[in-house]
Amino acid sequence: MAALTLGGSWKRKNALPGFGLSLGFTLFYLSVVVLIPLAALIIRPWELGVDGFIKAVTEPRVLAALKLSFGAAAIAAVVNTFFGLLVAWALTRYRFPGHRLVDALVDLPFALPTSVAGIALCTLYAQNGWIGELLVPLNIKVAYTPLGVVVALIFIGLPFVVRTLQPVLADLGRDPEEAAATLGAGRFQAFRRVVLPALAPALVTGGALAFARAVGEYGSVIFIAGNLPMKSEIAPLLIIIKLEQFDYAGAAAIGVVMLAASFLILLALNVLQVWTAGRR
Amino acid sequence: MRGATEDHPLIRWALVGITIGFVVLFLLLPLLTVFSAALEKGIGAAWEALGDPDALSSIKLTFITALIAVPLNTVFGVAAAWAVSKYDFRGKSLLTSFIDLPFSVSPVISGLIYVLIFGLQGWLGPWLREHDIKIIFALPGIVLATMFVTFPFVARELIPLMTDQGRDEEEAAMSLGASGLKTFFRVTLPSIKWGLLYGVLLCNARAMGEFGAVSVVSGHIRGQTNTMPLHVEVLYNDYQFVAAFAVASVLAFLALVTLTLKSFLEWRYADEIAAVHRH
Image (cartoon, rainbow over all chains, first blue to last red; front, side, top):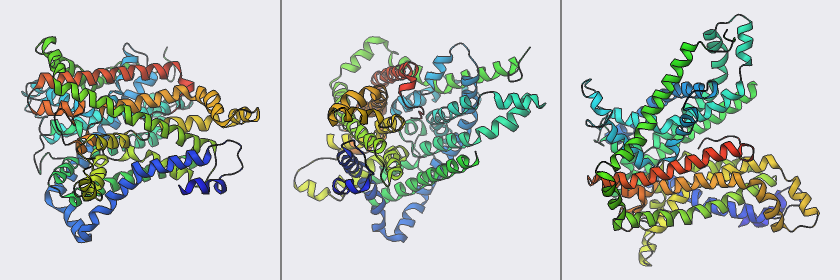
């Protein structure tokens, strides 16, 4: 509760009451719910020592799981960046039947519990499912393979790209393209040389957000993945398996690696934001 | 004649076609699967599955969890937004990044951190066992994990909104002699109510639907520590597909209600809720 007493000297002169109370409560609640538990995660694996930590995160099964989580998330992020751009473009530029419905559906992965999405995707892509049975003649197996992991991560990541791009596309308007057209650019040239560079920071941000979410995703993946060790076992699932074996330090070690990765992504995005703000 | 910024009709129709196809394939079909699989053996079977005592207890636990976690995070969100938006102090941007932190943490890690503290081999584990207090594999752990994953929703909705509004109106009310509380309820609250409702709506949807974080701390005890999303998993892994999808369709229905309300709020009160929405 140091903030309560420090409060007076921190703030500039301000007639509104409640600074000490609101900031004090904020800091207290933040510490109890978020900061102290996260500190427990960061401290825990080091009881293994540095060597033990490195050994814990480089054992083959852990490496395979991390590789799958990061690799599948990267593929899904690329797919989502491409299709997310198409969806955002169609939603901001055109009016078509079902426009409102499509726009609302984009948020579905935010609203639908991940276990519901998980069992639905698994049923859909199983060999007797609506999509799965169409893929059997083509000899493509999605459910219970790493491809299934990618499909689930595409589902979960799409809204990040679309919702990041939509406001930027709307703000951009048509003026830059019109200027390009006046100067003799064709439609495609105007898009490639004028629109795409303006969208690039938002595309990268949306893609990175989708990637960050996908790396840690659990619920929508575990049903369709099949969870074969070394093949289709994702890192978050391995954390749970280690916990069930009471290997707390090993679980925390994987957690720290994943947490470090998502912080690096956030940091990079902040740098990007500062950089693009400075360019304008 | 097409304008200089109009796309060729063929391109337009191709893009709209791909968009609709992609959305149908990746979003609409999974949603339809939920309802169709629930009704596979008729509405009676689905209804019966919902009346099962374990299903009912999972519904109850889900509501209890949301009823504790959402109000706490709402009070926190308002307090945090008040502190951040109405005053100037050092470390403000650090504080707002800390508030957003739970969004960038994997759900499984969000559960793991509480096991590391309260679990059998956690920091407080031995002490809790001596005093016969259960947190992990019990309601407190489920509520804590839910609080963590829904932590930023209300705050991140209100902070930009209240920062935009500044503090002129509150200062005017105070200078006319209103008390601090009266100023908050008569001046601040009416101007943030739609943004607040929007944040609470999203917070509640996630609280009722959280799976990964709760899964780590729950222990999956049927009829006791299974929330609805966990009960869906248990039933599905038990090959009780109709029952699993029946409970899942209740959750999907809740998600659709949330999306409808969300779209309505965005359409009707666009200016009164914060501009940027990502989560």
